[in-house]
Image (cartoon, rainbow, N blue to C red; front, side, top):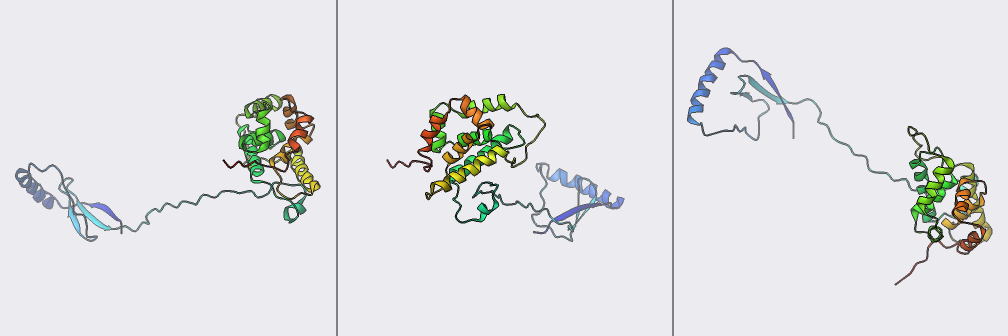
Length: 246
């Protein structure tokens, strides 16, 4: 439907006086009417006279373009692989794929780094990501041994400190060297096993543990994780979740 604009044009005094007298006559005969209605359809070239302001209203088609709201469709970024220092692995069909839970854990780790306003995603952030995802065997094993998200977060702040309140992390904080080595360790261990299947969250957890000088390893050790527990969880390294049909 075409839109219209209203422009006020002055009229002559004689016309205004005749309209005033007409208003007085009309008012006395229709005093019970309290509202003024306009026709639903207006002729674009029809001139209307307003009895309220004494001006002549000219209605003509608008030449301006109406504003149309354009909404961009939401775009979700889906990761099918995790970063590696070996580019040939990204395109190799022989390289095993990461499980969905491992990929989600990595994404949650990035988010935890951003929440703490850290410039990088370290092994401590990957550890928190595993716990945030929460449904993998690795996450369940950690919680069963008293290692919870809140404890890891508190240990992280105590070990690495708080970031400047005015600092904003990038959308995807780059990995620290220990965190990248932890990912590559997980891939290497899967390849060494010679078994089919995906790289699981347990591989990721043990990759973090393999980095002895990293913040993630120190935090796990301070919360009671040790080599014996690492050997115990390693038994289920190739399992990501146990399905129960009940």
